[in-house]
Length: 410
Image (cartoon, rainbow, N blue to C red):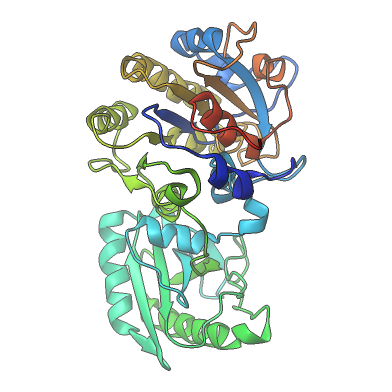
């Protein structure tokens, strides 16, 4: 990984200007280059992205380090110039903040799933058949009413989408160093929460007591009879984009994890966007917000990742084409700098996040164009920025091309 100058130099050099930056993150955009097997980007017809590529420069960036597969949180933090290895933000706090729930210092959160298990306690479905939100929400609220407190710790359950909810523990002496109970496999029993440090013993004990009561409450429920927890985490101390880079940022995103990233970074959140929103709806939200005070915009597209995880490269290509159809509306807003990329690669043949470098396109008044005529992994690998660009350099490059960084030194 390249030397991370962002926490030191960006606060010194950042300046407020009228220029506007747009980061478009098509989740899981990248694929894996294989002979005779086109990636979703290569399958898709995207003439407007190709036209943008002729005006800008391409590359592939490494989210963490070669060979390291990033989660969604680390992938996004690296794009915004925050070292994900030093930061270590857990999924629990991202999901919780993404639901609009405040997390105070000392609170511990976890991402929770309703799940199903057989009479022997072995998991039969880690996601409870993706139980509908309309069914999961009252179940989560009833569970919270049944288990409001353990010892001197308040228990909060906040419903999310489908089978997901956020667990928040509020009380004295809590530490987030607790292991996941989700074994990430079916046919086995949930794991016991274990303290990774002596200081986390109370948190593990309270969590175990909560799970015991939850199992008892859910016993006999037809749709979900157990709970899985992962990503125990508190709220980290970190500077926002306003503090670090003098930006006034706005996020257009639909899902809690990405809204959690945005809120941790101090972004405002555009109203009127939900998981049911189309790419066109998100672009409409961007258009509505454009007349406002913001000078940095983060637009997130989820469908590319979902299709990749399902192994459906054709559907992933259709999501890319859906975005491409909306790109003229975005260009009509005349953003000074546009970055189009993903937070990680999700190759359809792998059906999962991968360690492969992520394609990106940067267009702005001071970007040195290359000879690319298409936007895909092969063109990006041979582009101006090369095939192994460090993720932590994306943000300062965009800032520099927008004229938002002053000279370093005399």
